[in-house]
Length: 416
Image (cartoon, rainbow, N blue to C red; front, side, top):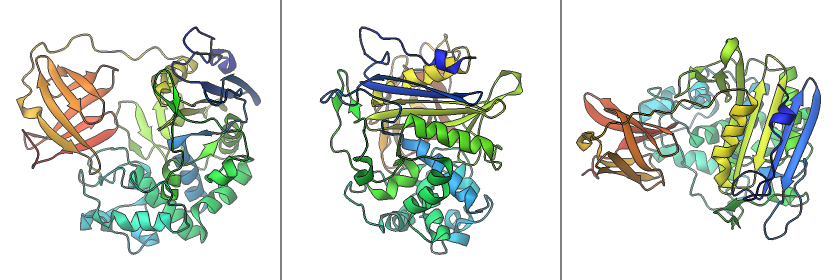
């Protein structure tokens, strides 16, 4: 398999990068020890300077791999209690706060509100931001019981980042540099805007035609879950580094939400044909989309970065093609007139609400942009983009709504 050839993006009439609505894309691969890169398009539609392999992008949740690697380097065991490291840790459910482990956070099974820091002020840049964000989780509601589901959680990685800085005895970002960036040779990677602006940066875009996203900053508390700014070259350096000494990070610790997918020490693990596995992580945030994938058995890796939040589906497809996988089977038979009365109401993850309203052939989800859902079974279906959707029952009653890897609880005060 020639990753470099597979990931070569065609020029097209709709986008100079070959990726819809993405002004700039960079791809990189590590294959048999050799690195190769392709850069397409521009860093910004307002200042059209070409993208290169060294251009910095926000890579969102790929940041979680840096946090997980730092924890491993510090010797933090997955089965230690969070309170072993943060004695004052609290969430709204006392039992969850007492019993939650590092493993639960690494595998997204804590159950409390997943985006507790999403609305923190963008100018919260002092060294105490992370500690305050973790303290503020004391009121974070429990969306599902501890370990009941895999439910993707940025809040869990905010707590893990706080553990990194407490165990390391230094701010999270400094620990990440010492424990990960410097050993891996990630020369331009940073969590700090004042460092990033000294290098070429791809600005984030949204919409079609794409427009620059403003403002650009975000709370420092979110760095361990999604604040990394890095380049394709630095992520290939990181891949080379962890391939040389994986430290068991790719051993599955729990199953993910899809069959054949698991979670290791922060890494997504996917079963492939022939007994092989791919590990890595996607990233998506305001203005950006990213994908990092490693094949541990063959020592190969590739990365795709785009300065558009609309590029998610295209990057996922490119990743599937680079892995030589067929397109996922999509359901072709839907229930023609499902009974949706049990499913209607308002669901919440503690930060955002999603309203479910009925239609003649399914439901419509409002509040998060998911839109129309058609049913393939009594409690499950897919949205128009193919994302799996499932209503989960407890004691016969619809209690939770799963949207891909996200879990929301039915709000008893807002139904109907």
